[in-house]
Length: 200
Figure 1 (tube, rainbow, N blue to C red):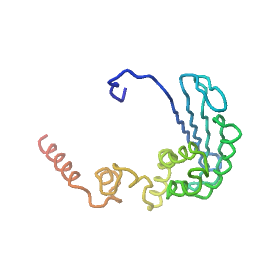
Figure 2: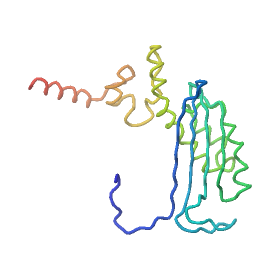
Figure 3: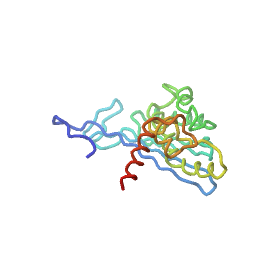
Figure 4: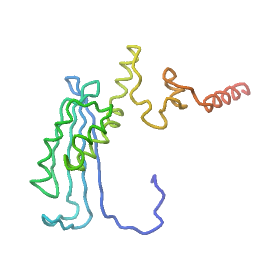
């Protein structure tokens, strides 16, 4: 178990599960299929009626089709289970407004502008927000290889998290071409390594 045991007895109230799969299509495009579910381990009363234990309160699907520059070329949203059938699910076509956006350049900001709040479904929009990092995990290596072959292009994952900041030790070691002012810790590690070698 990755977390420490809770210090108190507790009862499960809710489970949200998010599942994302990434695919390469025969025509060279990429697809991200994302699925979000919300369930409760007990019967739950909704204004629209009773929801049995384990039945999904939400079962929401979102597919983004991308070109190899991470530009969204097609979007499909489907609300399989929602608390207000006939109302929640009518917003799905609004997600077509994401076509043309870059998934890796100002995506979350533009997403909020276009379908934030009452302009979209809260949960579908939350699901869309996590897709940039999933896309980089899935397809970043292909971009890295093609950029390396062409001798250009900064890897898209750099400067998107603490470990991969341009002035950090990881970039200095694994992406030296893109390193900016490598920190003293890299020099210290190199010094220690050299010392170890000299003692052997």
